[in-house]
Amino acid sequence: MAPKKNGFSAFLLHCKNEELKNGRNINMKDLVDELEPIWKDMNDEKKNVYKKMAAELNARQTKAHTPQQIERLHENSDDYWMMQTYVEKMFQFIPDNDQLLKRKFMLLHINCHAHDGEQYYFPAEISALEFSLLKGVTRMYHKIIGISKIYPKGFAGGMREHSDKFHQISCWDEHSDNYNEILLELLSFLKDGQVFNSDLVEGKLDLPYMFTIETESGSNMMNAKSSLETLYSTVFPEHTSERYKSLFKMGSVERLFNEILKRFNIHLDERYIRSGMTIHDILESDIYGHGLGCMYHELKEIAYKCSKSRILQWMSNMCKHIHDYTGLELIPGRHVAVLLRDGSRMIIENEEVPLTRTDLKMKSLTEYIDYQEDF
Image 1 (cartoon, one colour):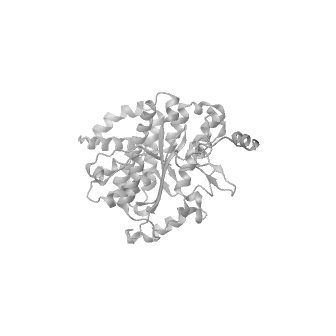
Image 2 (image 1 turned 60 degrees about the vertical axis):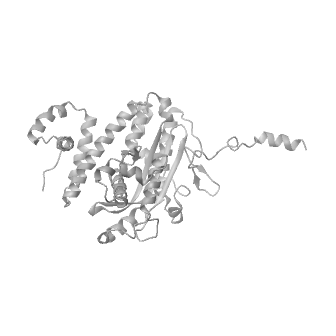
Image 3 (image 1 turned 30 degrees about the vertical axis):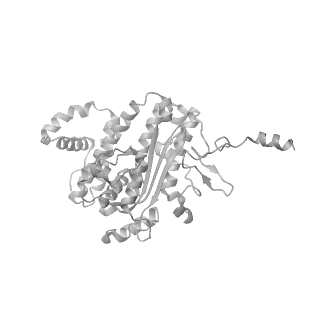
């Protein structure tokens, strides 16, 4: 069995991969000599990133991996480091809190047709949500995807077990399977403009970062990214992996939320410190039920497993927490769900849909009363 990795060895692995990408084939001894001083001067926050990478690699080391699976683990570690760097830089270029309130972010959750043992992931349900702290939900996308015609036959048992446990979207059910159409719909939503096959052939498409949960039961950030890459490669098997690996940029919603809290100085507030809740706890609190899931999961009465309800939950919990400490104005139906008479909840999923009498260009209630009194 290979020796256990520590934070420094994960750092070495990441840097070695970067050197190879840049065409520099440096031997490990020389690389160690170069990187030891950098590691010693690195702060704890950055060291913890590599320590987490090492822990993930060690946890999987007990399983037998093919060379392709090992390569994917290394790529995931690199992706995670790039994401951390991107989020930090993004907030450096947001000049003030007013601009932060207006900034739009993209949340994503994917339930996968999955076989964990074989590291195979294909989207079963995709939900994406664009929102800002100022306006709440601005746009939303949702799709349930079938795989009955293409699923790897040897994975059937493991995929059924995963489905039954985490989302109940069976790969044998009849769901949409026009993968070219689904891919273009999703990319057009993310781009906020029509995307065609020719855009992908030319390789010039630039998409926003999508933020999803770093890890949860049955899924994680890198599995979601892997599932989108599998969808793309199914549509365009002739394209190289470099094309689609650079297309889908995935970030941690926990990391995004933490940077927002830091900008508002909420992480320094004694009330917040005493609460004892982690970033993950806040995002996952108050799981929404009836009304916010897709029709498929609502009818099964398992809305809490729905990708759509999950991203609405994250957005709403972030906004409510910031409201508690900053006075951010919450718009019912945009930032938080409104409770309907039947006990279900509702959020309006498009900012163009009117919410108030003024938006609907209706008279005020007092005007109607005055009009009736004239008669």
